[in-house]
Image 1 (cartoon, rainbow, N blue to C red):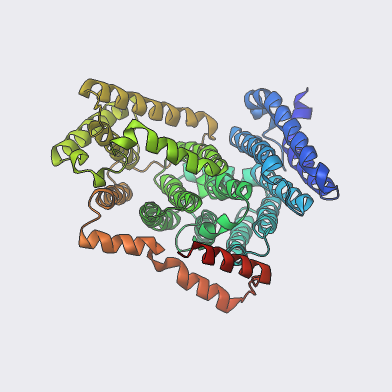
Image 2 (cartoon, rainbow, N blue to C red):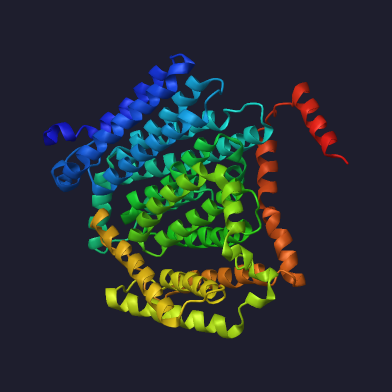
Length: 540
């Protein structure tokens, strides 16, 4: 296949998904799942067969005006293609027996097509239309069960917030067009890079555009207080939740990576991300620990992970943003699609030797509570390991990401030291070195997937770096106290507030319903009778 033919691959995949979704939507219900699965598999094979050539010859396509031929765009297109195949294959069995299957597959494929268009286009207008198409298509999936009030309310809030993000993005693109006199993304980025190399500062139009892009990314990534809809959309089918958490919500990170030369030069946009995403990461990670439902716990985890990804961008760790985006996508896709096995996993864990010794919940077993010496040993060992690897690889950027890794490694070492068969110090040190080397190697490898822009590195122990380190330290301390010292009165009160989500979603819900009320579906008589019968059967 020639390079000219391969250059149409970014158009072929979304166009095929769109036409396939339109055609399958007209089919009979008993045939749609099989046809959608076959189509997604064919697209996956085409992408995998052509990716090596497109990867090594992407420089030959830089002159394209409507399509961006970069390694980053090829990776994002591959992520869409792989996720589409996984979700459609899973839906083939999961959605058996559901009504309106043709409608489900139509909007699922429309959503995938819109994402593919967004991550491959080089035109501001097409990018915005693709962004809009994602939201409108996803809204039809979120309301697939139209008789569920929580699903309708969540979709309504998502619809309102999506319009705000799209309006912000539209104004930002209009300002960029006015400033650069071009609707092409590569022209805007190249000009911004040239201005940065010449030492020129951003004009007010560029400053406002950068802040609006950062604001749109915060809303897209469901950062607090714009997060409530993400927690409540678990009422939708599991494949839809996987699509949302493993793909669509990551587009905020891609948006920032795409406009890195512009956003990174704006101190206002950077600090907007540092403050909002940083506090969202802290709150979401703590709230997640109080949840019991698997899907709700995963939803809060997504809020925290997206906040951390945006925080990494603000710290100038762009390669870590891409690594985080890819790892989170596959992890959340597996977690949601495997959520149905939570009961079996809990039973196996309970029957394991680790559960018998109660090491998973040390707070209920005083014999395995770590003492101060264990914590100091683990913290010192992890700090030494992180420092050695950081110096060995020659990383000179923000230290806060490494500090977070050291804190995570500390928790892991403490768990090892308090289990029934505690490993030796040498084994612990060796495993810590291995994990840190893998992290550093993956971080270093991501450099080859990002465009060679001038880096805006945040120096170690700068104000932004210290802010992130304080947030990570506070998260470490509070999560440890919530896990091991929940009997303390102050910690118990904190746990109650966290269980309520810090009451951050209530005011936004009231504001949305006041601005645009929605009529929630009433429960049918049959549903009410079934619920009453179940409640009566549970009475002694």
